[in-house]
Image (cartoon, rainbow, N blue to C red; front, side, top):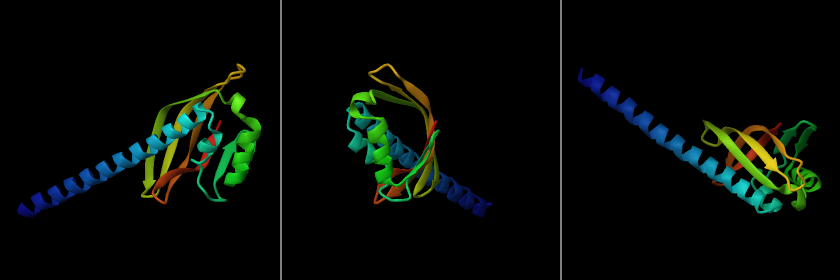
Length: 143
């Protein structure tokens, strides 16, 4: 019986530490996504793009296809979302699910209220990776 108490306490402590660690990860990821939204809403496209992983294997998947590489993603956004068209980005209904110590699944609703009245809305999902202590979008699927 005495050993059973130790096993129970050990399991409880392990689950408590794991839960606290996951909560911290979720908070860090949400902070990054909200900071990215702020960049967009301030018309700071370069700042917004800095939230994409600094690697050639980063990719964005959208209804028109796949764009791979940070420079190509930047070119895409600069072509289709110039500053005067950016408007106000709102993201809601976040889901953040840790997959490992360095990757999480994310999803949310998004809407962009453009100044020209052509609004966009939908959902995005993706994988974020922790690189050099910061969370970055590694795979972005929007639709």
